[in-house]
Amino acid sequence: EYVLRSELAAGVDIAFLSDHDSVVNNSEMQLLAKARGVPFIPGTELSASWAHFNAYPLDDGHTVDIDTGQATVQEIFATARRMGADIIEVNHPYSEYGYFNSHEKNAVPGGYDPSFDLVEIGPLTDNKNEATRNRETLERVWQMWNQGQKAYLAAGSDVHDVWNFASARARTYVHVDGDLTIEKFVARLKAGHSFASQGPLVYPEILFGSEVQQSAGGELDLSYSVQAVSGLRSIRLIERGNEIEALAFDGISKLVPVTFSAHPVSDTWYSLVVEDMRGRSAYTNPVWVSVAP
Image 1 (cartoon, rainbow, N blue to C red):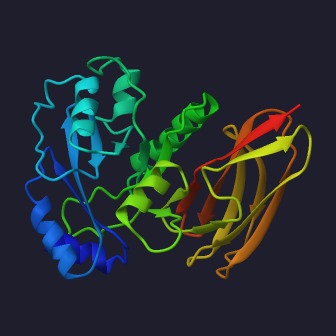
Image 2 (tube, one colour; image 1 turned 30 degrees about the vertical axis):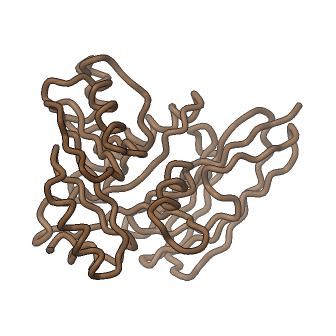
C-alpha cells in the first residue's frame, strides 16, 4: 500500500513493483493499483551477488524457481524470459555488485552476456560515487551503441524505504501514441522511444530510438524542445560518445526550442545530455542515422 502511495505521490503514470527474487507481493499490488485506476507492471529483481536485474512485465503464476546465488547469467536471463519478461534491465551497473563492474573484474558466472534490453541510470544524490557510477554507465552504453548494440537507457531510483526516500527521483519518459497501455509502453520502451531523467524534460521532433536515412554530408536537423523546472544550464549534442556541440543557458525555466545541424558522413548516432542548474541531467536514447554514399 505504501509503495503505491509513494509512486502516486511522485506522479508516475504506471505503478511498478520489483522485489528481490520474489513475486509474492505482485498480486496485492495489482489489486491496489486497479482500485486506483492505475496500470501496473509486475516485476522481480533477480539478485545475484554479482549483478541485479529487473525482469518485467511478468506473467501470472510464475515464481523465481532458481537460486540466483548459484546461477549463471545465462540461467538468470532464461528464467526472466520463462517468467514472461519482455524486458531485462541491468540495475546499478557499476555498484559494488553491478553487472558491468563484475564483468570488468571477470566475476560473472557464465561470462558476459549482452542479451539484456535496458541499462539503469540512477538519481542524483549527495553520494559522489553515484555520480561517478552514472557517468561510467553512460560511457559504457555509448560504447555499446558504437558497436551497434541497441540496449537503451532507462531510469530507476531503487527505493527500498518509501517512508524516508521519494519514489521516482529518476524516471523514464516513454512516448506512447494514444491511450496508455502496458503493452504499448513496454514496446516503445524496448524500442528506445524514451529518455532517462533526473529532472529535465526533452521533447524531440525525431523520436529517440528512430532510424533515419541521410545522404553523406547532407544536413540533418535535430530539433528539440527542452525544459527544466530548476532552470537549464546546458544542452550537449553527443555523436558516437563525443560531444560535438554544446549550448549554455543562464537558468531559463521556460520551454526552449533548440536545433542542431549535423552533417554525418557515415553511419552514426546522436543523443542529448541536458543539465539543469541543480546538476540533474536527462540522458536521451539515440537517433540512429544510416548514411547512403
